Image (cartoon, rainbow, N blue to C red; front, side, top):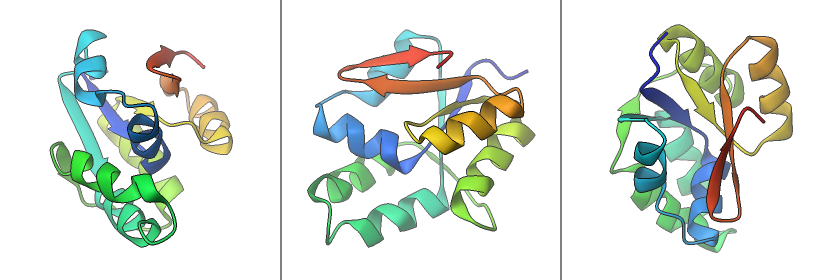
Length: 119
């Protein structure tokens, strides 16, 4: 298992902007040196930027991390990527959390300004 890698979902990026959380700093503090953002997340953030104020800033933050090309529906592609890389997932999406846990992935979420594990 690649313990130093984590895949990040769009809602976690938006949440980090909303609560002024430095995702890179927080994730490295708990042992993640490789932060991966699927390209569908970047596309989703660009699409949301007209409706959600934080989405544009979230896309700028995401651009600082490693990108990964994925195919298919974004949520399942994110989970598939984390599974294929044998790494963790950062999301606040309840359905994704359930699915990721069923696939035995390590899942982290943001709560206010902190990242919590094993949600």
